[in-house]
Length: 51
Image (cartoon, rainbow, N blue to C red; front, side, top):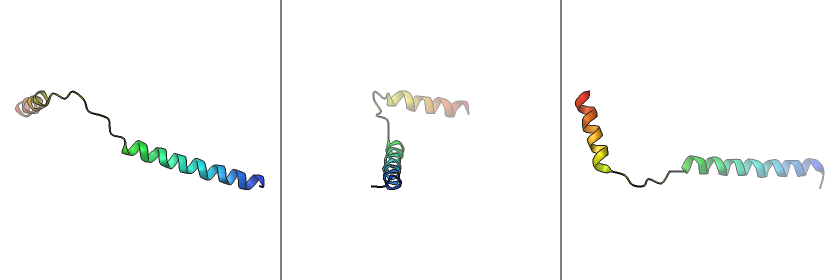
């Protein structure tokens, strides 16, 4: 295969990999653990009272 086509194939693969990585990065949601819901609610009430 000529060099130019090899480079083009490599470029296409790199573009695809970058696109996949970007989609993964955008879709990533951190796992939420050990939430104290009551404390969060209390902080909202406190913030509302001060405002």
